[in-house]
Length: 120
Length: 120
Image (tube, rainbow over all chains, first blue to last red; front, side, top):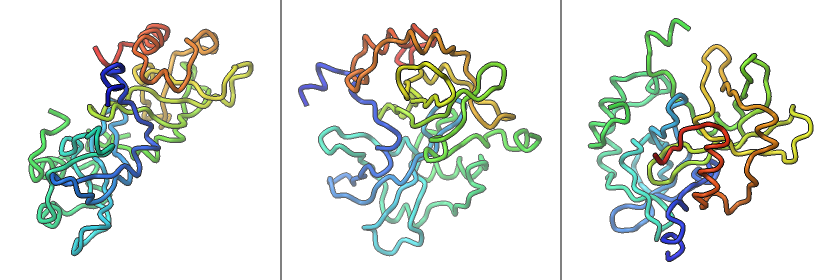
């Protein structure tokens, strides 16, 4: 968009609007959307997008936490693009509510998705 | 909390839960709450908390964007503490929906609240 050149910082979005933003695969097909974000209360960094995968058949769960670094915003699509595959989701480290405070789980998850840990 | 020592990373919060988190002044009195966050879509940084100030009499608006760096999370209060005063809010740079893409407004606002710009 031309306006993005004129306003290079036009890239702020409300947390309420991120919830529901589409996520696409590398071919540009929608694979799901962002249900909500996990935020580091202190640093103010987004650490995970918890995604809803309505379109992927055969997944064991309805929601999966994805490292933020595995998503890339695409202005043309007005959504995020990821290289994450269905098989990666199926093979992802098991997840529970306790995982958010489990650095071992975090380390495994970021490694699983080949993402650079946010705490490094 | 002792558990925070055992789980140093127990500081992740859902974006849905940040919306509604209380904000306190330096004396520990509640002055408002966080309505929503503004997030940099690309970097995943929280840039502003848009606060609702029900308790502050005489403010011209119901919501004010506050630089994220002007808030500090307090585990004991389970909320954010800020040194921002009512007078600062009254004197804040005028705000519109276009402000999110206006680096001049952003610069003035961060300066007004003595906060370090997130884009530096």
